[in-house]
Image 1 (tube, rainbow, N blue to C red):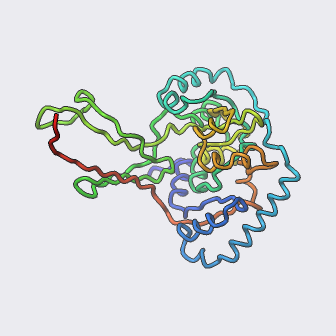
Image 2: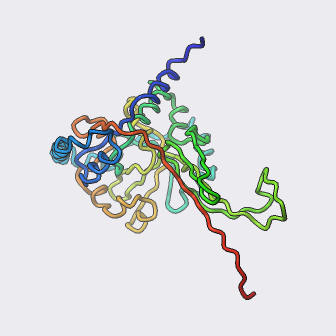
Image 3: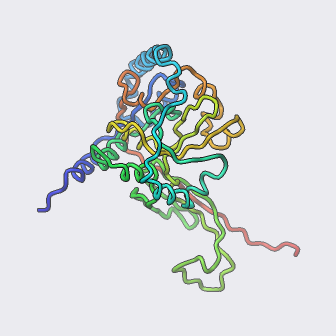
Length: 318
C-alpha cells in the first residue's frame, strides 16, 4: 500500500477534523459574536451564553490595556524592500487581468508588509483553513513559495459543485470563503466553445461565478501610514503562525474619505477613525494572542451562490 507523504497526511487529517473559527473577542459588536455562535456553533455551545459574555468582557479589558501599552504601534510600520529576484514574478502579477481589473482606481504597488502590524477589520477566520495552509506550506517556505502563496496566479484548488435546482435556477457550492458571483457578460457566438445551437445565435448572456483575484491586499492610509488588511486573512494568519514576519502584498494608498469608500469594506468606510486613528486598533498578531482570541467549534459550512433568470418575450412598436 502506498504511504502518504507527511504533508499530504497532515492535510487529509485536517480535512476530517472538526472545524473551528478563531474569533477576536472584545471587538464590538458583541451581538455579532453571539449570533454567530447561535447560528453556526456546534449544538450546545449557545447554552453557555453567560460564559461567552464574560469571555468577551475580559477581552475588552485586555484591549484597554493594549491601548496604553502599544499606543501608536500600527503607525508607519517599517518593511524591508522587495527582493530584486522576485521582480519577474511581480511583473507577471502586474500584467495579469486579475491585477489590472481589480486595482484600477487608486495608486497601487506590490511591497513587503509587516504581518504582525497589519490592522484588521475582520474579527474571525476559519482556523481549520489556516491550519491547512500551514500544512501545505511547511515550516520554512522559501521566498518564491511565499510569493505564490500571497499573490497566486493559478486557478486554485477549491472544489465547486453545481446543482440544477429547476429549469431556470442553479446552485454553485464551495467550501471556500473566497467564492462569489463575478458579473454578467454578453458573449458572441465565436466565444461559445462546445455549444451546438439548433439555430443561428444572436448573442448569449453569461452569469459568471468563481473566485476573486485572491491577491493578499491592504489599504494604506496616507496620513498615519497604517496598513489595513483587506483580503488574505487566512494566509496572513497562517504565515504569521509559521513565524513569517514579512510578506508580499498589493497595497492601495488612500488619501481621503471618498477614496476609502471606493476600496474599503463597509465596516471600515463607515468608521475609518477607529481603524486609522485609534491608539491601538486590532492587529493581525491578535489572532495569536489567547487572551483575546477564542477557538469556537463550528458546523461544517459551504458557501452557496444561487442564480436564476427570467425570459420575457413580447412585441413593442419599432
